Length: 165
Image (cartoon, rainbow, N blue to C red):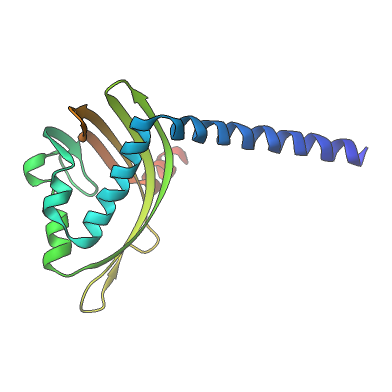
């Protein structure tokens, strides 16, 4: 009887892992989706380096989105302000990304990921510990280049708090 229960558990776990693996494999097989995930990694490398110019080049001229911690959506002309702050204030930034999902729709790719970010200031002050956020970016292929056309960011805890009722 015990071995039958163990067999059922193994089957269930294998089925779950195969489903997750198949989803990741499907993402990996699409070159557009793979290219966008690489650009998301570049995005964070540019932020960490305070490279405002490279960061802003990732955005479409008609971009509109809702960055983390902002009261209202922003356009491309102001999207690099926080990266400039990282550079100008010499903030040491550490981050960790977790890909949650992505899908290509022709010349459009939507990606979802969560992240944690810790900022250490030159005076020793540290911000961001224990905060997990989530981002959705919508990328559009423009010629040979993928550009961010829309996005939204929020704290993961906001979703948990809203669903707790």
